[in-house]
Image 1 (spheres, rainbow, N blue to C red):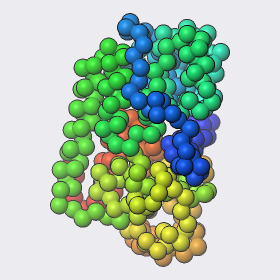
Image 2 (tube, rainbow, N blue to C red; image 1 turned 60 degrees about the vertical axis):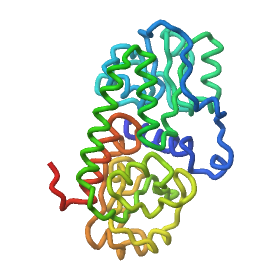
Image 3 (spheres, rainbow, N blue to C red; image 1 turned 90 degrees about the vertical axis):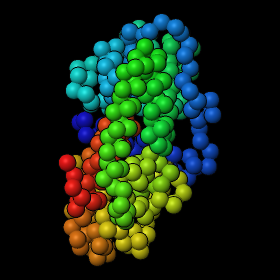
Image 4 (cartoon, rainbow, N blue to C red; image 1 turned 60 degrees about the horizontal axis):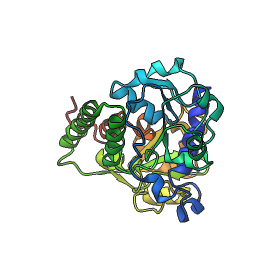
Length: 307
C-alpha cells in the first residue's frame, strides 16, 4: 500500500514540480508570492506541528525537532517514527477537518498546496501555516534556504545550520573524487508511461550534474519533459538510471527497459549499465538527497577509489 501511495505522490510531484503537461509550463498556477520566503506570522515557538509534505517532515526530524510533529501526510514513511503518527491526507487534498481537530499551532506545507485552496482555507480558519518551495527547488542552495527557514521557525537555527553544513561536506567529498573525471553520458527516467526524462532545469538534474553525469536530456525544455524512445536511441547513453525501477509499480525496471524496441542495442544495455537507484533519495528533496549524489557518482564512476 505504501509503495502505491508513493507512486501516486511521485506522479503528482512531477506535475506540480513543473512538468508533465505543457500547460503547466506555460502558466504556473502558483502566484509569485507563493514561492517567496515563508511568512513568520507569530513569535512563539510552535510545539504542535502538522506536516503536509514528507520532505518537510524529514527536515524537522533531521534538525532534531521531530518531537514537535503531531501528524503527517498520507505519504510519509521516513524516519520510521512517523509511521505511528496520525495521517491527514495527501499532497493535493489534505483532510482539513482532521487537521483542525488536532489543534496544531503550526502547519508546514509546500507551494503545491495552493492548487486546491487548502492553504487559504486553513488560514481563514485562523491556523498558522508556513509555505515552502520544496517541490520546485532546483539546487541544493534552494533546499538549504528551506532548511534554514524551517529551523528558524522552530527555534532550531543552529541545528539547521549543522544539517546544512553536514550536507555541504558530503557533497564536497563526492565532488573532490570527481575533480579530473570525464562526465558519463546518461539517461535518467522519471516515469515510464508516458516516458518522462530528467531535465537539466530540475533538482534531479542538479543531482546528476553533481554526480559527474552528462545528462542527455539536460537541454530539453521543462522540468520533467516527455521524450520519445527515438530520442534515447539517437543519444545512445552509456548509463541508464531508473529511480525506483522494479520496486515502484508503473516505473520501468532494467528488465522492461530491455524489451523496448531497439533499446537492447544501446551502449548502456550492451555494457550492463542499467541501474535502479533509491527513489526516495533521488526524488524527495531533503537531507537524504546527498545520498543520491554519492550513489549515482559511484555507479557512473566505479573505477574511482571510493571509501
